[in-house]
Amino acid sequence: MKRSLPLCFVVLSTLIGPLPAAETIPNVRDRVPLEKFVIQAHRGGGAHLPENTLETFRWAWALGIVPEADIRLSQDGVLVAFHDNHFKRLAPGAPESLKSKKVEQLTYDQLRQLDVGAYRDKKFAGQRIPRLETVFAEMQDQPDRWLYLDIKTVSLDRLAELVDRYGLARQVIFTSSKPDLLVQWKTRVPESMTLLWMGGSEEKLRRRIAALEQNDFQAITSLQIHINQIDLSNNPPYQPSPAFLHAVGKKLRSRGITFQVLPWKETDPRVFHRLMDDGVESFATDEPKKVKEAIKAYYKKKQ
Image 1 (cartoon, rainbow, N blue to C red):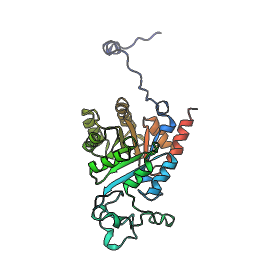
Image 2 (cartoon, helix red, strand yellow):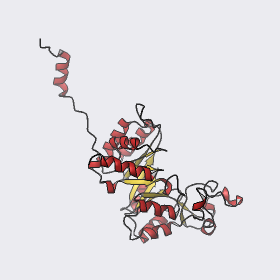
Image 3 (cartoon, rainbow, N blue to C red):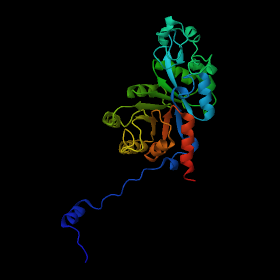
Image 4 (cartoon, helix red, strand yellow):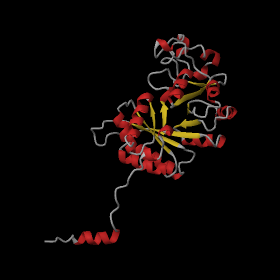
């Protein structure tokens, strides 16, 4: 016997029309060629190389990835690459009188005496804190060499002048967690790429994304979200959730903004594959070589 649909369903269908099909997420393999997929090497080369040294930047460029440089200003006005607020971790061999000081309290002549390679391994001994100008010189006339500039303490005018002097407006990615700073930078170097990074709970991220949307993501060319609590056996498998990533990815794609995530301390290729399924199209990582291989394997699946 043929069964009739309930009257309430018929009435509802008449009012709202057919239910929409589940939305398909555009796959990154269909939008971003493998050779254009951007991997950011956290602090220059990730967890196994000295942070922010010229040798590490060269290694990253040779691998075809984009190193991150943390930018500070020395006491005598020299822009350098260095992450920490003191020297205890990265220059343990420094004189005791200097270990608790900041880059901003020392001249460049003092900074260049510090060994910032040996803390990783004795084979890296002798690596030094580089002047940003020296790094830029190695990027000049090398359009495939990009650099994230994560702003710690810096004069935007001085940095913009240096970028212009070396003709690197299209090779640097100005990076900060402060949207206003990106806006200020774009007024100085309109052609530069930018990255806004953010972490925290999903609720906090929702509020931040909503605020950015009110200004149509002004001055942002890439947005990075930190991924935590990663366990593929859980539902959801990480935080923020896949549903949240889907929604953010849709907003960013509609504006041509690159969607990057930083999965903290993660090396499992399956996690990176799942994140790409969820709409992610770029990674920051402490394991750039492993992530590069994971991305290659993901793209190979389509062949």
